[in-house]
Length: 126
Image 1 (cartoon, rainbow, N blue to C red):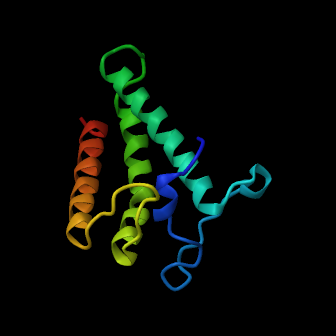
Image 2 (image 1 turned 120 degrees about the vertical axis):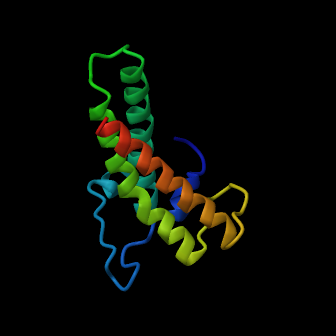
């Protein structure tokens, strides 16, 4: 959690899309974090934790049914979809990462997002 936060560059700023994007960032100021960094951190922590939970449940290392972490990962992926939409509509780039060619590179990200949602949906309702 040190240095640049690559995904902060694709977090839609408050007020994006004509003021429709108004996602709060509770305690961000107390933690000394910018809005975009705050959202990058909590989603990153959830992605790592959820991915580990899903993998460990899938191999039987945890007694939790796979459907629980899969459904949470579906919800998380759905929740971060606006960042990918913002990235496409505003040609936003991740800080410190190679530039994604516009618009072709964003098509791949969109397709990958759909594949992830489909996989998590399937695991949730298997």
